[in-house]
Length: 300
Image (cartoon, rainbow, N blue to C red; front, side):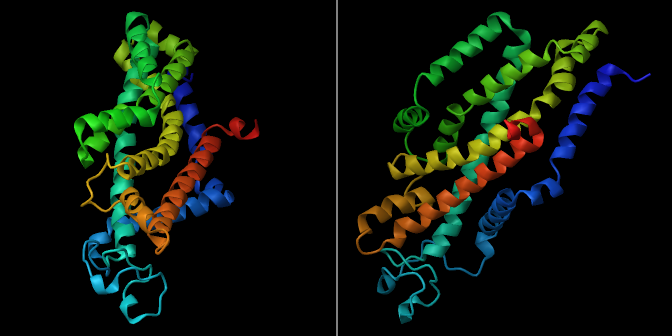
């Protein structure tokens, strides 16, 4: 006879694995294009130190404000042009992707682990633990995400470590709320009750029978959250509260390029396009993951 306690979570996971497949991805043209774009950007960012491009900090005042695809002699080796100090835009975009993507994925990883753990404890234990955790989340939700990040950054000072810390501290709330709701619905399911009746302790129940079934929704939230973190990092840097000016990032390129829009539109336009394409790609990929994990959402 099949053990219902072991078979129920396994069936749920096998259903998810059937939905998330290469075939289903290829059927979604937008998600496929998004994945290809993200892989190319990620590969370029990872290989930035060994790519045959000039240093992002190398200055050449004789090649200032070279336009993209220019045929001028000073444009040699600068396919996307140069900035006000003669620095190569392509090199700064590639190296800026390293910072933006690193911040996005690292912040999401920290926020997802921390928020999911709190949501799991709140949903399963209930009582005073749930009340305390949910009141803390309400306090964070009372303030706009970016405003809270600005306040923290103004207090701590601009640095890459502080950006990661602040965005992690302000980004865990959504995971906690969603995971708590999922746990509340799973806590009374038959296989969890059966495991309880067989003497399974709370840590084992949460780790083996509940946690595997909340991974899917958490991954969907994370895929969409990366885009908002990249925008938040760019916004903080644009305001002078994020990464120091010595570190090339997309947000810093936007901030410095706004003073030269009349003479060099590409200084702000190209990093802006990079941010838009990256965030849209992450959103398309997140939408596909959501539909693959729960097909009913795509029909509603």
